[in-house]
Length: 223
Image 1 (tube, rainbow, N blue to C red):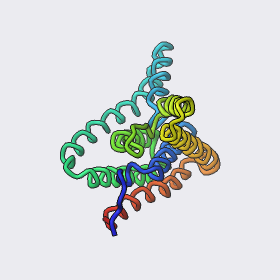
Image 2: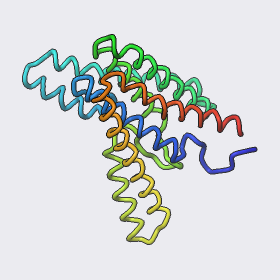
Image 3: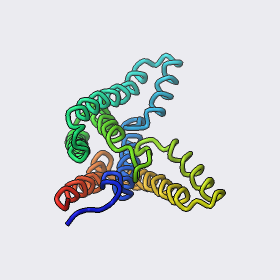
């Protein structure tokens, strides 16, 4: 059996919604349990870093610098992996997904027993790998960690499609709305679980993470 479509599974809507759910989950988890910091939304971390820098609170500045640094480090790893595995896009995406899952498991194990430094470093690294690897939804660019661009695209594409009677553009706009919704659901679920179980709430993000790995492996086995 072969999969006959114009894009591979890592560009599909199911993977995109799972990834944005993960992103929303991780960002809400770190915000609730790790002192108001974000795993992936570095704009928020930079704002708060600058805010505390203006106030002269250097310890707070360093705490927000931590996820920014490890997010940047993640991009170095993305470049090295992509350079090594660029001949096979499936292997590149599958290896990145496995790496993300491994570091999520590491964060689950260490988070209840170590300080925020290590948890934030690990999850910022995960977010960096994710956004550096999965960049297209059915051939079109999208973001699965930060939602500003998706919000702009959802509004623009849907309205342009409606004005120009273009069903394809409207569909792309609607798909981007689903991406925004999955991120929001991830935030809601994570907030509820993190408030109830504190750092042990992180374990539930393994469900969508393992699903992404399963779908990537399944595509190769069916090809």
